[in-house]
Image (cartoon, rainbow, N blue to C red; front, top):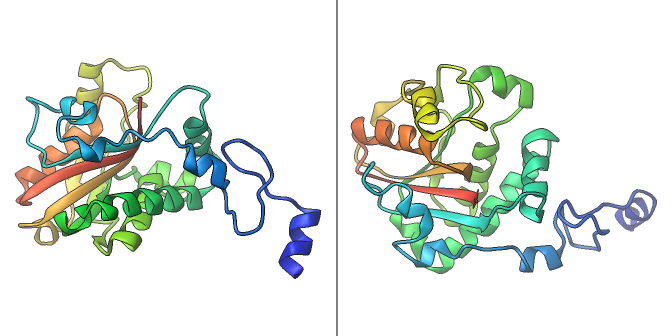
Length: 225
């Protein structure tokens, strides 16, 4: 009853459509959840995400949960996650995505979930790694181990937003490091990012993981253009 009273005085709003949330809704309303622009890429081995990496490295799977569009509902939610301190948005979206993958039986394909890391300077400024929150949510529902400290970023590379593809690759090629090689040895790894654009960051991380002895790498992002 007290929570109902608090909600009446300080109503909560959906981070996607900004309508008021009703009882049992959290962060994102049921309407927005059910109308999310899903890619369904995990049902197609030759999907548009996988094609980004053809001829560049060998991936087991490559997926994105949602379609990203400027000023759309997905962009609004991810903006809240990355810039407004809503870490729980990542966990929620990761949980939902993990549930859909589990429904397809794909959770048994992985031994370890790793997030794309942030440099320590950006991590301190933001307070958390948004990809790590997504990985945590996916790990919970998929019952697959997750570790946010195995893969680290040693160099604070410049922002990727306005760079061309070659510039993006040169910007991230040598900035990542494996802190615990034994943790990844022989493992089937699912690498998590929030948004995939050209895929250069994911490509650099996946290449390093494969070079350091994991069995195979798959990638999954919450959104892709």
